[in-house]
Length: 450
Ligand code: ATP
Ligand code: MG
Image (cartoon, rainbow, N blue to C red; front, side, top):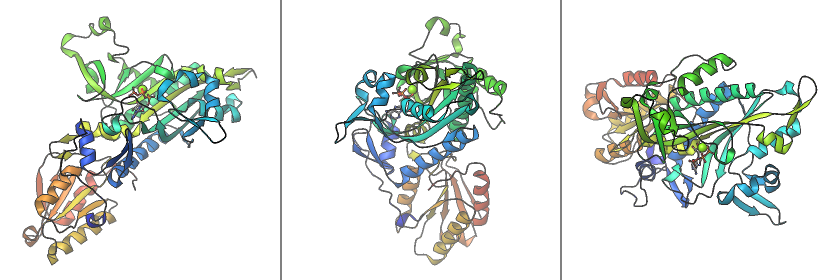
């Protein structure tokens, strides 16, 4: 992309309404624009990152054997009356009446709708296990929408639902989700720690929330510092293996790590004092096993091996895709702007032309641009007729992990400069070398974008 042809409305001033750094930087970098309280338009740069996150989620869900689909945002109130949640859900549910006087709602989650689809089409244990998921906009009429996309009213969520014959099978699905979530967040450059949580209006005894530690997080968390040493890494996993998934769950959840809802002071005090941590975190996902709560209420049964109808065991699993943008920025920025992890960056490298209009510099930038694209990378070329200082400031603000600076002086010696946004370190090298180096850096980090 050439910056002269892109739409990147960066702001020079700090917007007064933004209280936390991620919100401030998303507005300043021209990623989002508030449409109404808690409702945002996703401008091109923000949309590009959102799509990448979405694609990482898809890749990891499909890798775990979960099946993508799409359900509507508007749902019928009658389904929610069947489960009893139409009255229970309270003011967070946006209720709508159509021209025929029928009650509808903008879905805050989809347990009822998916259970209805399931009961209409599945009647035998032979079709199980099955996990369906979608990534769709949700609406919750939060009393205090704030912090930008972090606590929106309209937000983008991956929600998945497992259907299993037995509790044992459903717990395997639970563990499988835990593993796939660990992989998902790590690919986004995040450490998200699974913590024992509370079921809330979804219900259920088994539930973990995934928390990214950050001072601005809304949840208070208590944990054994050893949990921060764990990482899933690139180990192989067989998602069909009950033992392997169970072992990962045990590895990642056996130490003390809880949100304030389930915090138990006495248990916490058993952790050696020097490892006890009280901090704040951003909830970026949650997994639940809730048994037959919805299947019994809504008649979602299958015939078991003896031909007897039994309610299916279910769980649901959510990732806050739009909130993740805020969480990533909270975890990765400095006073100049965002620092995107390689796995989610909107563009892989910025090209800064120090002397726009200089024949040699222009030609070198064009060659670089073409070479990066040919290698499957997405460059953002700042080809505007602007001062170098302004170009650097924009690149730093929007946070591309790598910048290539091209100027007449370097070109005389046949070199350009490759700079890391994270460390600020620069290295001079021939342009072909820079391309090669970037290709290597992004190996295993390429995600389909837009
Ligand atoms: P919270 O406790 O933050 O209100 P929740 O526990 O009610 O969230 P879930 O039903 O578990 O949310 O939804 C799954 C994920 O969706 C959450 O882990 C979170 O990342 C995201 N999410 C929930 N509410 C919002 C919101 N208002 N804005 C943005 N993301 C949200
Ligand atoms: Mg939750």
